[in-house]
Length: 414
Image (cartoon, rainbow, N blue to C red; front, side, top):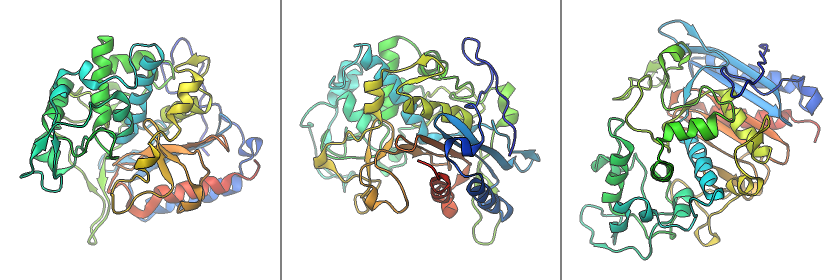
């Protein structure tokens, strides 16, 4: 395994600092089984399924596995590095949600506050009578106002950035500013009354704008000062600056129709450019060591290395299922709901381990991203695991499921 360089914190870390490393057996993890994990992950690279990846595992706050393998940039012959930087897409949601809960804890924001208190355009939203026919349906007033908690839970009636509804309205453009995007969202009718249906959505981006309006700070500045800075997440932000671009993992399309991996073109505003749009739902880049620190703070009750970012009670609430029972089960498709998962604030949460496709424990939480990043933490086994790659489609070859199963099997002592 690759050696991990440990650097002391002086204020906030200036360089990436992984969790402290120990031999796996010291915390009840099998080195032999981690080697099996390593071998199987490398097979996907050797067989050309993905360009490269970084994987990390920690238990009881101690790093037992951190490996970079393959290539972050095939065309330029750049090997993957332990601190390679990835677009984490929807894993951004939990970071934004933590910032929201900080304001709740401070009494500056209430979970039941109407969003329209902060964003006036949300006072005039309409609901589609027949969301299955969005082009021709009548509209009506919603049964109640959308609340902050509705947005945290994805039950506010908003839609997803990739939905036909939002695509036709050109809701999302990285060339827009956040206030423009949020007003575009408010101009599109809701797909359901607030509090009546779970729909995976752009809610976290709206919450990012609420943070800006309450604090008077841009979202990137607020997160740096109050979340990523205190947690030592030095490579987490909304773009990759010039001095770090030699660590950027490029995005590839998985092999298909006999063709090899293909480079995916840059977005309209590349990830190497400071974007007008600070998108709390999907906009962040990060590294495996950074995101492991983020998840470890939840297992620590809201602290890491002496820095508290949230009180223990609200930290726990964030990774508990908070979706009302009447709306369960939830899922990305109403036709195929998750039998095992609920939703906290920014994370899925295992609520019924007996219905999972692979071994999990109730209370496990985490989320993934549409370019192949994957993460979870388990309070029962005190385990954090993060896998980052950049591939479309994100679920190609079920690498994350394989990773999840093999990490769980590596734990040999409770």
